[in-house]
Structure formats: structure tokens, C-alpha cells
Image (cartoon, rainbow, N blue to C red):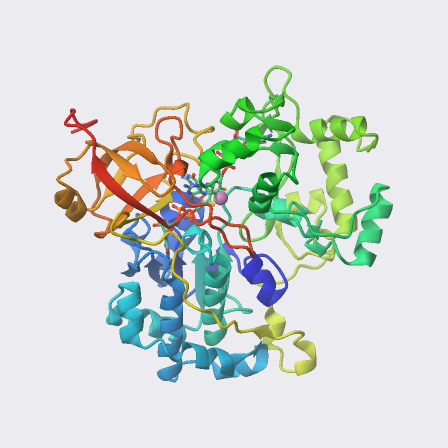
Length: 557
Ligand SMILES: Nc1nc2c(c(=O)[nH]1)N[C@H]1C(S)=C(S)[C@@H](COP(=O)(O)OP(=O)(O)OC[C@H]3O[C@@H](n4cnc5c(=O)[nH]c(N)nc54)[C@H](O)[C@@H]3O)O[C@H]1N2
Ligand SMILES: Nc1nc2c(c(=O)[nH]1)N[C@H]1C(S)=C(S)[C@@H](COP(=O)(O)OP(=O)(O)OC[C@H]3O[C@@H](n4cnc5c(=O)[nH]c(N)nc54)[C@H](O)[C@@H]3O)O[C@H]1N2
Ligand SMILES: [Mo]
């Protein structure tokens, strides 16, 4: 979001799922959508069915890559090098979209000069991607009338994640793939309502509707609606919170629907910091590991199918979420609990009676304060099957893609041009060495979810539990058999896991999830290095070594 907000002023994907189905080129970059965004992936497959060419850029030959016309298996942490090389090739082949560059962008000469050092040979040797593959992606992208660049954590979970995103935005600007039907830049959001959470102000620097908390006029509106005073300063994002705990500046935490004792990088350190708090409150639908550390647990909040409200997906579409079941026992809606806490802190809000009425009243307050949501009544959201923001008018609808003004014929209508960014290749913090020669990247599998709290309780026929996935070459070199338990050691700690030999991995690369922390504690290994611009930790690049531990029977054969 930080990258998109920096260039375009709005932190949201720029197109729509419908346009994914009507485009010429789709690039999934650092995204395994087949496993992690299966519904979105159906739109991708429809696009492919309609003639789009699919490229996947991922160090692993993922389930998504198996559907691709071309897979570019780059080395972990070389995405800036790859996109700069692609950019230079586009420029040198005379394929840059000079019309769009002069209409809608700024900073092109500096950018073009900065990628000049990225010859195909250099790019190929740094990234590990063959020259022909780089050329094919470059030429297909630049020649396409419409193209969609989609990314997720393979791009963002690096200490230079924002630079990675900026380097992909550069490619779209270079080819004119933004601001018109069928083209776009799409960060796929992790949970069903991450986009909505950010839009509602659950980020350190914005109020509802992505409005800057430092703007006095905006603050004044919220102060008068809420009857409170709002401090004119930016807050901390999650990583900064943990840093502040380390300095003793943050003494109390209220965690709602988050399990940081399992999901934080270098979790041994994270748990130590959580234990040192004066006061920890956890509000969750399960008793998590974080809840076990808490002073107060607010249990049994109603889950999504037991609550009313809205969720906003990766294409910025606000949809209704309706209560299908009564919550079990005395479980209550998160919002009821929060309103109760407000009351006990001395501030009463009156939104009516019952979940449906409260949810709609809160939503109408959002509409009154956030221009981009103003036109979305509950009735209209129902009638239209969801509405994408921005929707300022109750009668009109905006196009499904953002930033069309960048193409306007009259320069006066164009607004701020989108700036190119000069982005420098910056390898992972956790360097490979003789002691730690293998690159561990962590991620997800289809049938489990994050720290396993919500998916740990069922038996899937597909599930094998956690494993350390190793290329056949590395397994042979270490003389590992499939299923053998081995020790995985990083600069922060050591854990045990069974080996799974996996042909989707290239030599030197190993893979784990973090879905089974009770049995295999992946985040003991990961590094807390993070991108200061976004606070996102470098979960995707850990240096490890593997050692044999025993001659015991393999966990499976
Ligand atoms: N089944 C399932 N679905 C989920 C989740 C889940 O736990 N389970 N979690 C949800 C959440 S919170 C999120 S944020 C999303 C995440 O969705 P994704 O980001 O798609 O999932 P990951 O598997 O974490 O990472 C994606 C890919 O990044 C690749 N990668 C690693 N390093 C690099 C690199 O340096 N460069 C490039 N180009 N690629 C790299 C990995 O090999 C991996 O295939 O999934 C959501 N959906
Ligand atoms: N090694 C490694 N670590 C990672 C990542 C990685 O790729 N590799 N990815 C990172 C990413 S992208 C993410 S998003 C985080 C995820 O980290 P977390 O968000 O900490 O992990 P989850 O398991 O999704 O925890 C969500 C919690 O919300 C609770 N919950 C669900 N619904 C509700 C509700 O309606 N109300 C309330 N109050 N609670 C609810 C669930 O019970 C669960 O305990 O992990 C990060 N950690
Ligand atoms: Mo996520």
C-alpha cells in the first residue's frame, strides 16, 4: 500500500477482477494465487481462457507457475534487479510507451538512466533467470495493449518491500498499463478484509477513508463527529510497536484478531517483549498462544458468519457480510465489545439495538466522514452486489479502474503526474555464508491458514503437517531421505522438521510454512529485519543450514 500511495496517492489496487478476465498479459509476481487466493485465481484462469498470457515470477515453481505460459524462477530478493533489467530491455527495444510517459508521468529521464547498468547479462546472472525469459516477459508486457501486474508477499515481505513494489509500478508506467480498462496494478490482500481495515483507518497515519491524520480540517470533522480530540501525530505500525516495547515506551497492548506470539518474525524475541508488557489484552475467537500470555482475555467474539457488517476485498469492492448463525454461548460481536470498552473509558456511542442496526449505523457514519464511501448505502451495496471505492455519489458509479485522469488530453485535467522511482537492488539482510549456505523462504499452502489457529482443528486428506521442503539436488548432497527429521538452524535459533523432497525447488532454496507452530516453530528462525517504510518483516529471506539429527524412521515413506 505504501508504494501505491507514494506514486498515486491512493493505497488500493487499480483495477478489477472483471478486467483480469479481459486482458492480454497477466503477471503474478511473488504471488502463489493458486494456493493463497484461489477465488482470484479463477479470474486469472478465465483471463487465460480468454487469451491472456500468464507469467509467474517466483523462486519456486509453484502451483500457480504450473498454469503459466512462462515461469521466471528468480533468486530470492532479486526482484528489483529483474524489473530494472526488464525496463532497460523495453527501453532499448524502443517499446516504451512514450505517449503515456509524457502525459501521465514524471521523472522518466532519471529512471531510464538508473536502469542503464542492468544489461540482460548482468540481470540474468544476478537473478538466475535466463536472458531469453527476461526478454520474453519484457516484450510481451510492453507490446500488450492491456496488462495486469499482480503481487503479494514474495514482493512485500523483504526489508526493501516498498522498493520492490515501486519497481513494479515503474514497469506499468513505462508501458502505460494503468488508468484504462483491462490494465492495472494489483496487490492481492491477505485476509478477506485487510483492505477494509486499512480503509477504516487501522493504519498508523490515516483516519477513515485514507484521510491524513495530520490535516487539521480533516481532524476537526472527526473530532466534532466523535466528540473527542485526536492527536495530530502518526502512530506506530506493528513492527514499530515491537521496537517500542523493546525500548520500554509501549507498555500496554490490546490485540484483536491477531496472534503475534506465533506470527512475528524472530518470535522468541517477540514473546519476550509481550511477556514484559504491563498489560496485554487479547480479543479472539480462540484461546491463542498470545492469549495465554495475556492479563485479560475477551473470549468468544462472534466470527465472521455470526456478525453483520461489510468487508472490502482486493479490488476495493465493499460487500455486505450477513449474520448466518447465532454466535455460540455468550459470544458477542467485536463491535459490541469495543463499544462496551469505550463506555467504560467514559465515552458512550449510540448506534441502535441489535447487530444489524448497529452495523448499518456505524457504516452510515463512515459514509458521512469518508468521501470515497459516501455513495454506498447498505441498500445500494445489496442492489449492486458490492461497490468499488471511490464512490462519492449516491447516483453515479466511477469506472472500475483508478487513475484514468493520467491519460486526459487536456493537461489541466490530469492532476499530479505519477512519478517514476529510481530503485536500487538491495539483497536480503540475512546473508548466505559457509555456515548458513541455504536460502529459506516461508509461505503458505492451500489447506492451512496462517498460524493455524483457524485451520489446525480439522484433518485434511491433503495435509502432511509441516515439513522443510528441499530440492532433490540438496537432499542428495545432504544424503537426506524423504520424511527424515533434520535440524534447521538460522542465526537466531534451531528447530526440527521432516524433510520433504520437492521438485518445485531449485538447489540452494528451501521452503516452510508457519501453519503448525505448535509442532514446528518456523518463526524461531526468521529475521526481524524489516522495511522501515512499511514495517513489513523479511519473512521471505532467511539464511539457514540443515543437519542430520538421527537415523530414526522417516515420518512418512
Ligand atoms: N491457503 C491459504 N491462503 C492464504 C493464507 C494462508 O495462510 N493459507 N494467508 C493469507 C494471507 S494473510 C496472505 S498475506 C496471502 C499471501 O499470499 P502469497 O503472498 O501468495 O503467499 P506466500 O506463500 O506467503 O508467498 C508467495 C510466494 O512468494 C514467493 N517468494 C518468496 N521469495 C520471493 C522473492 O524474493 N521474489 C519473488 N518474486 N517471490 C518470492 C514464494 O515462493 C511464494 O510462492 O495469502 C492469504 N491466503
Ligand atoms: N514465517 C512467516 N511468518 C509470517 C508470514 C510469512 O509469510 N512467513 N506472513 C505474515 C502475514 S502476511 C500475516 S497476515 C501474519 C498473520 O498473523 P496473525 O494475524 O497473527 O495470524 P492468524 O493465524 O491469521 O491470526 C488471526 C487471529 O484472528 C482470530 N480471529 C478470526 N476471526 C476473528 C473475529 O471475527 N474476531 C476476533 N476478535 N478474532 C478473530 C483467529 O482466531 C486468530 O487467532 O503472519 C505473518 N507471519
Ligand atoms: Mo497477510
